[in-house]
Length: 571
Image: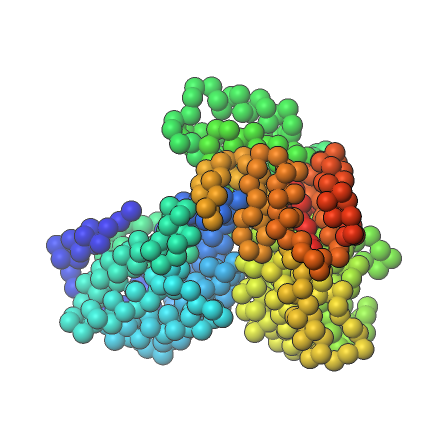
């Protein structure tokens, strides 16, 4: 980690004073910040407090800033107005996850000032950072210290203090990075959950990388700022369509110590036995792994014996833009397939209606449930792959309705959904803030077509609090959360209130979690089985529920979600 002393030394001894920065230099500083964030995304992913196999703050923030970086790199001769538009619009539309949305709001706030000046000087830099912080705080309903917001505020306050004493942007920038670094290091003292897990805030860490990259470029450090657009490998896609496996799984492993000789060959042999197209590269302490398989959970669980997993991506290649959300006579469009010529234009196929729905879903079975309940467009996403603001925006634009209710169905997608609703044109976007799949299903069940937009919005939102949600997954590293000691490979039961069960048995984990969810008013338990759920364990779980809670109805449905063996709701 860079320290404040390193920056202070660089400022005083190795650089000349800089009193203003033009658009050309600002654009390069921004690209440098984007590259710094991209280079550290895996490390930032590892800072996730919960040891679940979907820590993706670094991935989300990188996707957010790279969307803006691509727009910036496309500018030939940027001026402040065109640069501001590229930075703001690119990050807003590309924002993924809560930290990505907050980063986009920081960029948006800064560009509100930048677009009105010819150059950035000490005064406008101070004003821009203050506006950035103000905008980001306003974007969050309940701002919490010990997060990316704390780091942003420390940076803007330091800039204001330094600008009183000097107009040298090199010196001011050093103070900004120094303050941001100190603020990040203080986050565990502000959020006890960070301290217990032994990590700093992941979003704040991402912001610090952006600030460091921009500052280092200003100081003359040689940084590759080339932004290359990723293009899909058409031959690989065609080949994957032909194989008999459903999932493309990729992840990285980090060992506590150097890998033993030959473990990479042993792991390759095991993965080849449960899949195909295994690709593995390794150095002394890290591995990058990719394969096709029908049992992604087995691939991950076996690999966890060697180290901690991070940057995990699981894609259903049979459904990735190639299949409808549900097999009906007139299937609803998904965000991936609704742009096919046979489905356009939506306005010619269905009459304009008062209310339509966009829902985020994370499995084939769940897709069918949402479309069956009336969702017009289903976006494939969830905890392991947060859709961007633009993904949600494009989905909402496809709905032929005056009002579009958006169901994010994940707490890390609510901000992106709200951002999409804010910039939606020609129709009104309304976010029903469902934070879990069961909440989203409950909201749709309680929609009444004959009632007004306002009545439905009020009732559907109120109903969210009446359903309890839980999920069973596995830990990817050793840690301690909420006073519970967790080992890599343990099963975890996570409810709306946090991790409530940890056990080596998936059935016992489910039982302990459910015991925390059921009360005297509970009447229905619904279980959505994941792609890796085993039939025998599902039967054992349902038998346990029938014996323990004989008066409660149990409903088991295929969810098909990855990573989470079971999603459960209690109503």
